[in-house]
Amino acid sequence: MTTTPQRLADVKSRIAAAARAAHRDAALIHLVAVTKTFGADHILPALACGHRCFGENRVQEAKAKWPALRTRFPDIELHLIGPLQSNKARDAVALFDAIHTIDRARIAEVVAAEMAKQERRLKLFIEVNTGAEPQKAGVDPKEAARLLRLCREDLNLDIAGLMCIPPQDEEAAVHFAVLAKLARELGLTELSMGMSADFETAVASGATYVRVGSQIFGVRAPHSAT
Image 1: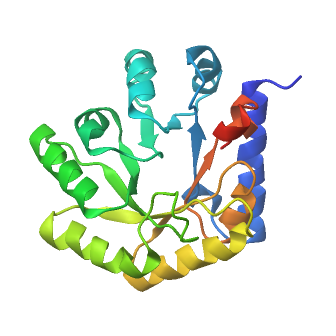
Image 2: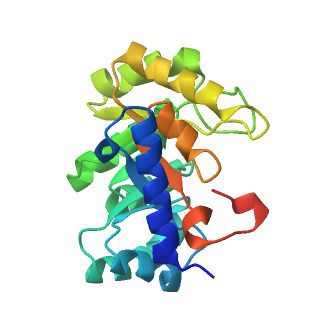
């Protein structure tokens, strides 16, 4: 049976190989190790072998486990990759270093207010619903430019890039291409896309952040796969 450090090393090796195949610099691709549903006993082996970039889907879950880990590893970089509710914005801004799920004006406004209040600057991504799925978060691709203008011009937010989660029953590469094209049109350089099942495809499509969980930490319940 493989260990967490072995699986983490394998994922990093696969990212590097995918980058070479795409004639990209692997150093520009960041691995967000997704730890939702996993406790400290799963996370510590990854920390012990030097990994520092992690992702969580829920603010409350992250709040329960990461402050203690950060006392031991203060250089942790924590990313919120799940939907953000406005009533969780204060905790999210206090805890996370990046939020990948700015998807509407109200969330942008409360995040901006909290960052000003707490005097913190987070790396922010606009989440785009490339599959136009009604049950999913994310701004419609046609509305992304408007949301970006609001963030930059009205709220003084530094938007680093775009994020997407392709529909499970569609070819991921198509959606990654849509996101990459939209980012180019908007003058954004960062792309958060690709999970355990398709991160190599995402690297080939230009991802700068890939969000991988089960390939590193093991299998979750089917509804939690990342």
